[in-house]
Length: 80
Image 1 (cartoon, rainbow, N blue to C red):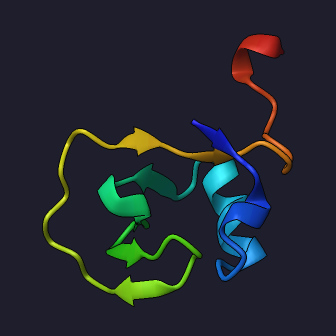
Image 2 (cartoon, rainbow, N blue to C red; image 1 turned 90 degrees about the vertical axis):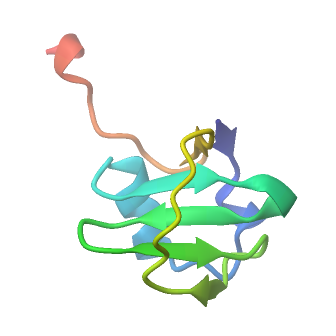
């Protein structure tokens, strides 16, 4: 799923860039919330990008991956 980076104004730009690079993952949850998955933790994110909870243990499998359409993506290995 592609969204504008302005849709989550309170989420730091560095986090958005890490998501687009595939280093961290952002998943869409019900009620407009998101789950930010880092290498060590998962964080519940509000519809505006604020961190609501850290170290989230419950990670449902039905979420959609989210990327930011207006930020750069890394080149694909298939394009080399």
